[in-house]
Image 1 (cartoon, rainbow, N blue to C red):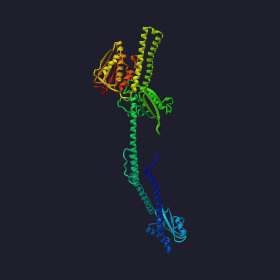
Image 2 (tube, rainbow, N blue to C red):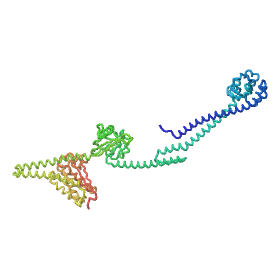
Image 3 (cartoon, helix red, strand yellow):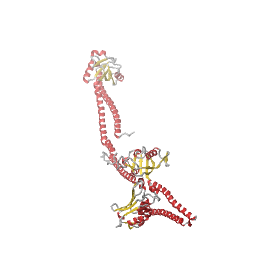
Image 4 (cartoon, one colour):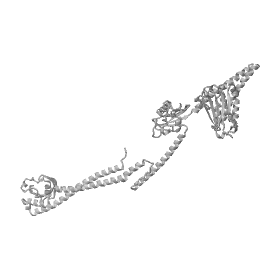
Length: 608
């Protein structure tokens, strides 16, 4: 329940004081009436004392008919009703009743003022209704002697009303003055205190604006200074919070992990830039959509992946977990998604490691923090290593089995057969060379990956290295009728370490021969404008889905390439050797027509 305002409390206080003042005014009214009545009684008492003295000096004045004349004469002079009452209570003189009707007036012996006057010859007073004149009057009576004639004077309603009107006027003026004073005080408080305070409250709601209140008194100045200090502190705190928020948002946007914060209903409260790149989100066709445009939208309808949407809903509704699971729902998992942007799809799917954590800030509702990490390369590496173990095992097993088989045959007596001995030794030698090539590829890749020092570059004629690479594979190429074209300029020089150039050119030319079609062609050419060296073959080509992974270690692609002998290390060696000099390696292929691998060389690599 809200506390009452200062103005309402003031009105309540004025109301209480008003009731008290009204009570005081009523008391003053009664007191004034009593005083006026007392003064009237004194005036009547003085007149009665004069009449009593006359009656004592001349008792005949109090006897009929002179008593009636006396009553009328005094009434005309003083304006009061005068009654002379005999000792037996009969009225012998009455100023307001004709003489002939005196006999009709009731006996006054039992009148209160008459009894009081006869009791001790003192002044008797009373206020009661008169049957004679038909109105309420104020009576004062005095006895001439003990138990004798009583002279009574009475003030009529006009006189009493005048007295009472004077008392009422006094009370009404007092009440009116109080109301006016209360109104002035209330208006002053409202204008000088209440309204400025309310205006100050309204201004204080916007801490971005300075508080300015012209204080009408010292206490208000102190209050205003306190508010100004408070506003300054709030504004400084707001600036610090904005800076801290911006810093946190900047850090959040620079994280490589995608981060999404959901409220307890599953609506997005925050999302960083990495999440926009990793998650398959509905961006409503906006290429410049940002995290703020997604705030307030339901995550299940924004994310374009049924598994992710269901997982987020389950972990949100299953409650907080302390050990990786809650209610049987995994708190983390790996989902394969096709990253979609504006309705399109990437060439290859991504593997996302998704993790959830429940947050419950003090006094706030439950929130859910979702993080997403692209583990595609790691999982591809695991798969490639698995493939490598299988391929390497196969590549090692086949030549080793041949070597062991031919050597055992020779040991069993084939050494004596010159023809068989020569054939078997050639087989053993070929398989040994095959093993040597496998080991050499592993050593080359290991050396490139572990190289820490800068390469020892020197000017090298690229055409010579291309020709040397072809010569190394000439025998295999001629056996399949493969032709070769070396279109590299004679004077083209690159500043590289000889080993690295030999590995790049040698593996690219070797692959072009190995994966070519019979009677095909290998062409090496230099594009001066694009600064690219291209190696083109006319083989079966590379599947589109395999192109993004063709330079991974141990990856051998698909289709016809996977059926050829090899470990899948050649292109990985080319990539690592090229990276040492900032050379970009790329591949393009059309199934059934062949492939083209290019080396895009920086300007500073090309020699004069």
